Image 1 (cartoon, rainbow, N blue to C red):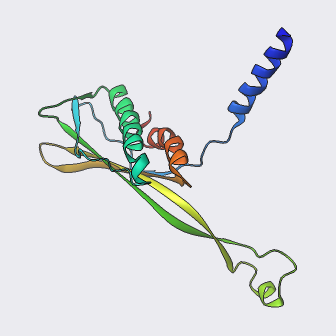
Image 2 (image 1 turned 60 degrees about the vertical axis):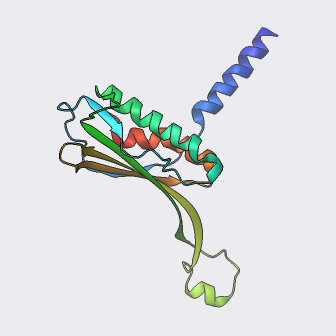
Image 3 (image 1 turned 90 degrees about the vertical axis):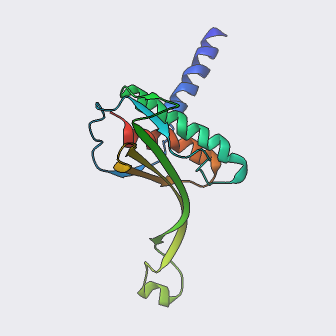
Length: 168
């Protein structure tokens, strides 16, 4: 009985360990030296996540928590008054199109242009801005994108996307 439980637990762990994480593409310049800053505050008070109205508040909380975690690892503390750094983020969800070949056995016209078909993929993006509060100039912007079909996939992509941008 104990051996069976151990086997089930190991099988579960292997399944989780081998689960494919979402492919995250990130574009950002190298994060600037933030040692001159010790405090930050969110630039916007309203949720900026726009997947759907029900999930916006939850997704906003996840995004803010993950960004805060990475900023605090860099020595920044959240401030309620006179922050040295402002943090803003934006999300976007759009359809992208990728070319794919027609299947074999279709009309001769398709054989002449085998790459003419396209498929739709929903792409979610997260952009993060770091702004010097004294000068109001943007110090840095990073954007991460991933295929996101629904709010659950968006929630799952956030930690890896933020780590790709702000991680060490």
